[in-house]
Length: 466
Image (cartoon, rainbow, N blue to C red; front, side, top):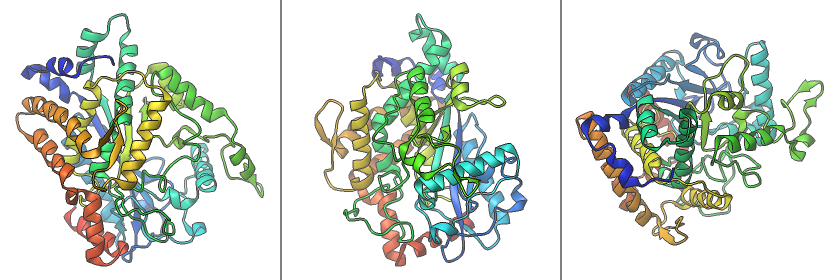
């Protein structure tokens, strides 16, 4: 949106208007492998006590039978979301007996590729489709990459804040058009400034040798290998850009990926020895295979795809897919992080956001990779969107000035200082890298002697504290 940050923030200066900044719903999805007491991937089946994977909307599996996925319902209060996530963890802990939930995003000790179990589903049409899709992922990317885990932060703006903005800025547009524009504006800013989240919350600075042998490059200053070129990504990522300027362009770009044959994936074959091993040989088998760091969602009707739902009814909510599992919190993300994320997404709303060309997305990707691989390096240089080089710390200072202003307004509505406190706590990491989770993980590994011992110490502690 082409608006001024200060002017827009001042719309919410009164106590009654400030409440609109808290108008929305939030949900969390967390992926985490089950492990044995030695830190090896558990090869047991998903517990029957948790119900059928297709029928339980809150506890299922991700790629692997060993990979639990916990999904909260959306709530109008972030504390309710956090409590719900905690309850789901407690439910799982009750039935996994001598196993643990691995606390980190990079995998535990993995068996041979062929021994990693793909999730099993019932023999329904949907169950068979999900199984074939996962076989395709294994074939295309390898099972080990699929064992990387993280969190998805889902949020929707409430009707009241959308209505208020529409009243001031929605001239000559329908409310649906305006709402879609809001979400795409937020997405563009998220993509431009996501490097800050990688720096503050990156929690995968190392990986176990069973995942991949040591790389040739020096990764001593890494923050998040999960979202780096060594982690979870599409093979075609650098070849095909998905644009984020309008819903129509976004749908066209994703649909092209869904309908265009891939020479590489065609060579793998759709059937092997009479068994279907991919849904198709297109660049994407399914919409879920688009591993972008932000996705747009709409509630689905019967037999409806996500693109069809978006085309018919527009954007309902956004899915932010950049957060690593935080091993220092029992549920993989702290309430302080969730407060910060609320303010950060409001920053993405309030900051000016014009349509951006592919070159700007390439610059955003470069900053992303730089911080993921070298974020703890002193005086790290990033590429500012004003085409000037800037240190990570100086750019972060610039952003935090605005985050603090938003937090003050939001705290007016919540009648305490929890948001300002959350921003101040994260601000400490700008000049002191020892406070970063990536630094703390590296220190923990030194203390315990190796990656698995540290991971299991955190897993055991998290289980007790749950």
